[in-house]
Length: 400
Image (cartoon, rainbow, N blue to C red; front, side, top):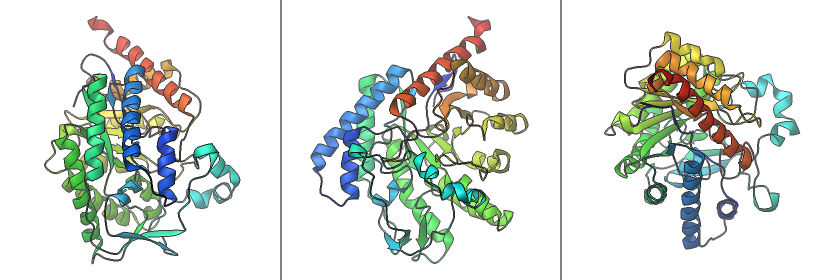
């Protein structure tokens, strides 16, 4: 994995806004309609080629496929594993939004909440199918089907080669966030269940590594479960989280750390985020992950101050931070000077060579959810690149 040896490199969290043609195919799937699979694969390959080209054109150094083949950043995995079924009336085991929904109950119950989420995108503005209330239930052994990931790897490799990209990554879900809304009715213990998920994900991670791509493990629920479980006890949260970090490291075993990125966020929904876990309380868990790079939220108003954590917590030798320097949480496009200041701040505490400029989270939580307009997405990525250029000039000014 590249370090920022002579300038600040740029990347992002992974999920980008899908083109309409891909959204149309996904909506048909959601409705249970048969689709022309060959036409879908052609459209997907073309879309990945275009989004990689666009990232390179903007100036992003380490690119991905926009997660275009996924219905959602995390629950996509339900379509790649066996053992789960949707059961109306079942209750999800964890309120992954924490207690924000209680603290701000009037807001969460209001039309305003749904109005600002960027959800329901579809042809002609039609809303996507909303799953019936309930939970996904594990009713049988979890087994993995690798056909989709093999094609995703092939699409990204071909697009990257065409665009002349040296380094690219595929984002995949971590065990703590896989089937996060599911109930286990099959495995005897929580540990057996979590490791069954990890065993399936291990195959996905290994396929990406074998293809020569970087593996990015995405984990929102590790942080989002904090508020809910801490209300029970600190020990309960730590027990829950440590099991899932151990399972993630098992799934990553055999993959060199310098081929792994770990992205931790707090969910991309527009909400008060008072329930977010303080970085200082979970940073030790993050650093246990056998990854070289850690992608963290750092640009939104709830987390921008957390660069200070690294004044007291030493980033291990050889590790990389990918702080968000632009955010999906606001429509305002960050000024490049502000972006540069954020980068320079991190460079000052962990070393310029250990910083890659990134984004807080994905700009699209799923096929039907876009947090900003596509034109704003690209403007923010342009601001990221320009800010990195300004920061590089200043950080390396004495050597040029």
